[in-house]
Length: 428
Image (cartoon, rainbow, N blue to C red; front, side, top):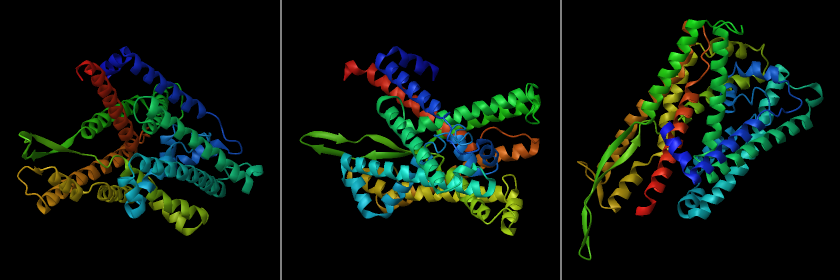
């Protein structure tokens, strides 16, 4: 990776893109220290550590949520809006036609709708979270605890999300890599660095915020290295399905006849099953909190569905596997792949075209999805089990490591692709 970046720095055009990307990420992080008035950030930080979904938002924003800055919502509403539009594209025929037949103009229209949905979601999400926290924990100062106070906070945070979305799009267009992914990556790395630094200073006795010792800190480092290595190995894995194309004679010229393969990633679902599962489990607790912390249903949920309870971990693992299958079902269509192969004169080696190919692709996809779901479920539960076993807080989550590794690998691949394109420019 370092060799790739060093070679890219020698190319003037790539050097400008790298500098542009760095400056935009720096701007994003600087905007993340501007606080929103009217909110007691200390109370929000304490509450965020007890709710999985709030902790997930805080992780993806690089602690901007716990500090209640204008970037508190980060780019999460844009991700939610993209997922919603993806689901609506499958459910609504008009949007499906616009995506498949509209060409570049159709994609621009869908992107424009996604931006509008992002801003609305950011405002509603900000107002909903602040209203819920204010009712149960009094995070708002009295003069802001009214309709106009909520509206002001919602508009400010929605504006921060719009700026983050604009920065991400600028990076994608003028920089290196996917801008939205890099913004999430920057927040995760910042959060991970702060967590490891806190654990280190606590272990050597510089601070005394927790109960970590040198042995526990070394355990955290070893677990982090093992998880990063394992996630990198699995994330780069793929199942290659061999494809053979038949020979065709057109005007005395022979076309086709070559062998290739269909690459199917081992973890094609990415981190979305983790996000869906955390969101699903955090929703009931948020709803029960509206009835008051002294209600019976809230006390039962708080006692039996804490982040370290066996029931919570089992349900979390099952939900991750279920959402992995759900997301695969709406993103992978073996029938379309089979039809495209048949139109191009290709077939899976050893498998008859048509229904047999569809069944083979579906069976292969199901096996990969099962492995991906089990792998993500283990990643999500192991840090919690270690924290209970050793009584030490692991300063990273499976979702954060998976996102960071995936974005880093994809960015390096894009840099390498641009280097190869410029290296062979004279031969094209």
